[in-house]
Figure (cartoon, one colour):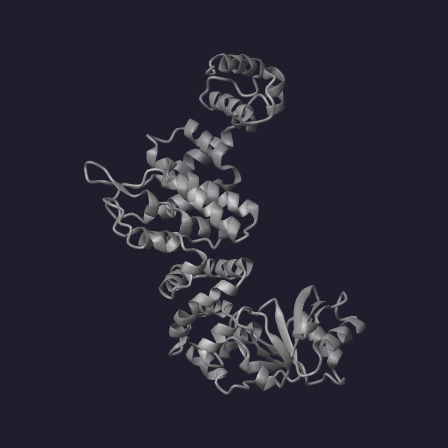
Length: 453
C-alpha cells in the first residue's frame, strides 16, 4: 500500500472513520488491471469530507491545512508528499451552460452513478482492503475491457462534456472497447464541448497526444467531430493530396509522422501533429503538374502560435513548437550538409535541436518508400562532431547588441539584431575569427556603409 494511504489507514483505526473511507477512481481501476499504482488518490465517504480533512490535519497526518471546496463537498490534503482528494459522496445536477454541478450529499451507490465510467466507480475499503462494485457491472467491464458510462451516455456527456475527451483517452490508454452507443452519444453531444474552458481541453488533449496510441486517438477525435471544436485547423488537412513523394494525403501523413515519433515528449508530439498544418492553404500545382506547398512552414508557424496561445499553452512550449515547425523543411533544400551548415542549425535551434532532429527523422519516414530520404544519421554525426570541436564563441557574434549600439549609435531594435546576425554569419562562414572584436567592428562599419539609403 502507498505510504500516504497507510498513514491515513492508521489514523482512522478505531475511530468513527474506521471502515467508512473508500479509495475510488483510477487507483482502484489500475490496481485491478495490474498496472503501476497511481501517485494521486481519491477518497470518498458518506460523511463530511471537510471534517475528515480537518481530522487528518489535527492528527498530524496531513502536513498542512486542507484546501476545501465547500460548494462541491471536496477537500485536498497533502500526506507523505502526495496529494489526496477527499469527496463527500454526492449526487449532481447540471445547468445547460456549465460543467460545474450543483451537488447534495448522497449514498456511495448514488455517488458511483455520477462517475464518468463504470471502471472508475469501483471502491476499495481503506480499512479492510475489500473491493465493492456498487453498480454491479464495473468489475465485469474491467475484465472484458469495456468502456461504459454508469448512466445513459448522452446524458453523461451532456452533463460534463470533458468526459468525451476522457473517453477517447481511456479507450486507447487502457485498450478498452467502447460500449454499444458510447461513440454515437459522443458524436451527438460533440457541440457541448464549447462550454469547456480552453485550459481543461488543453490538459486533456495533452494527455491524449502523449498516450501510447496517439494517432488512433486523434483519428477518433476527428471522426467523432470533437477536433473541429478546439483545433479546426487540423481537419482541413483531410483530403489534401501531396504529390509525387507521398502516398498519403496531408492528414494521413500527419498521423504517420506522429506514429513514427517514439518519445512521448509533448513538444515533439505537438510539432509532429502540427508540422504540415499550413499545407491546406498553400497547395498549388505548378506548370509541370507537380504539387507544391510553398511557404507552408512559415504559415504553419503562425497557425500553431495562434492556436497554442488561444489554448493558453506556456510560452516556452509554444516558442519551441513554432521554431521546429518553421525550420522543418530546411534540410530538404540543402545541397550537402557541411560543418558550416551544422553551426547554423545549432545556432538557430538551440536547446530544441534534438527534438527538431527527431521530428525531421519521423517526417522523412512518413514519405513513400521510393522517395529520397534525408540523411539524418549523417546530419546527426556532423552536428555531434561540430558540437564537440567547436568552442562556444564560434557560435556567437563577437559583438554584443550593446556594443553594436555603442559603435553605430542605433537604438535598440531590429537593425541591431540584423547587424548581430550578419556578424555571426561571417563567423560561421569562416570570414571572421571567433571573438575577433576588432575585425567585427570593421565588418560592422562595412555593413553600415552598404545599407540602402
